[in-house]
Length: 222
Image (cartoon, rainbow, N blue to C red):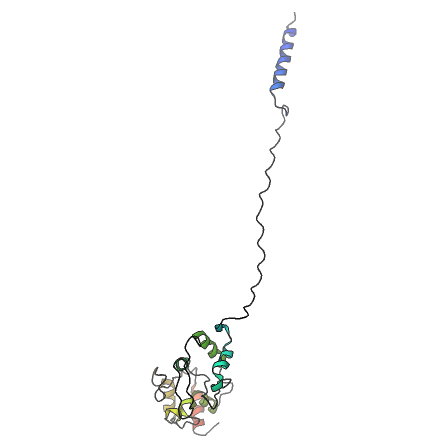
């Protein structure tokens, strides 16, 4: 008996054993990769927002200041604050003074018999007042002695400086006139017709403006 006759059957058995133990994919082959998971569904994109629709009935505070002025004030004070036969001009009044008069009201006098009613903040809010002031408080387009005097002085001192409701004629001395304008009187006693006078700084009424007003009171210009 040859030696090879003994080993060859053993070798065949070993090969069969190895073949049986190998995976079905075959010796030396990579296993099949796992099946990928399905993609996670994403939430839908939000819709593009529509622009807001304007409110057809805006709050009262949103009404234009000039419309409020026409509604509440123009009957007596004119469409631009120029005054009428029922009430004084109110162009460029000091806002603190104007606010106090609006809130407290005023009695009539010899020049204007009709009293001014008081308006509380439920009727005209502070915000609405600010809008009204912005609408009618405009710089004078042309400065003359007359336009300056009628704007800043005539309400209390009369159309030509003769006294008006203050009962005090305007001084025609430049130094005194300028001192009263710069210092005022009565502090914050706004409703005292015979005492209160607003003070104006040089940005509001310049020295040249004062000179023009003095000339107008003296009849030297118009």
